[in-house]
Structure formats: C-alpha cells, structure tokens
Image (cartoon, rainbow, N blue to C red; front, side, top):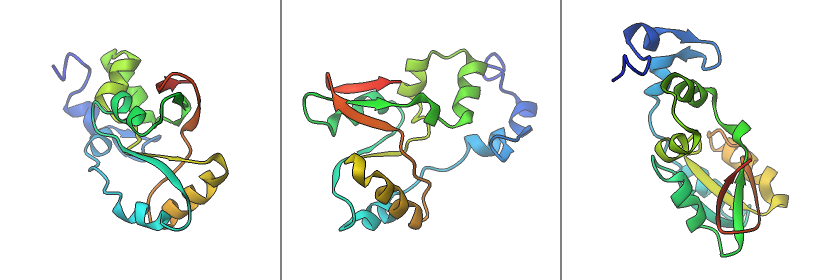
Length: 146
C-alpha cells in the first residue's frame, strides 16, 4: 500500500525544506500534550471552548464545543505543508484528510476575537506553537472550511 501511495524508503528519507527535516521525521513527530498550554491561559483569557483533535475528530470534536447556531470557519491556509504532500501523493480527498488527520490542529480553543492575540501569546510562552486558524460565526453548528 505504501508503494502504491508513493511512499517508500527513499521518499521518507528525503529532506524537505518546508518541514526542516526528512519526511519520515515529520511523519513520526509525537503527539503533543497541552496541559501547560491550557494552564497558561487560566486567568488570562476567557476560554469559551476546548476541543482535543485526534484522528477522525476534526469534524466531530470541534462542533461539540460550540453552542447551537455557531459554526467554526477554519482557514485551509493554516494547514502545515506535510498534509498537502500526503493529500497529493495519496490522492486523498480533502474531507478524508480532515477526518483522518488533525491537519496540524492538535487542540482547538474558542476564545473571543479580542482575546485571540493574548491566547496565542500565552500558549507560545508555554512553549507551544499557536496560531489563529479561523473564526466562529452565526450559522449551522459544525465546521466549514474556507
């Protein structure tokens, strides 16, 4: 299956500039633990919701933290380049990519727009990489890719 999908020993040892490491090293990056990052937010930002994203959990878990009438609009440009490579190499449809991989979002937090930069700063100070991946707006509860 790996060879049919374009992955073999040579391809996983290839250094990729966008990753700053080999494809194999990128694919074997361990799962992050976010306890310190969340603790860094306590008292600094009013967190409206938290969703731990696991494989198969993007479309299912993000809506669970949202009230009725709110949709999470996620920006596709926030996806790390490794996922574009996987999708193109394996010819995997976008919905399947989000349902199978976390697309680089291991933990999604919902905070007020005016608190976003403070939340990113606090999480970054705790040693994690944080960035805004979208916004919540009125709409049918769920996830919309934009």
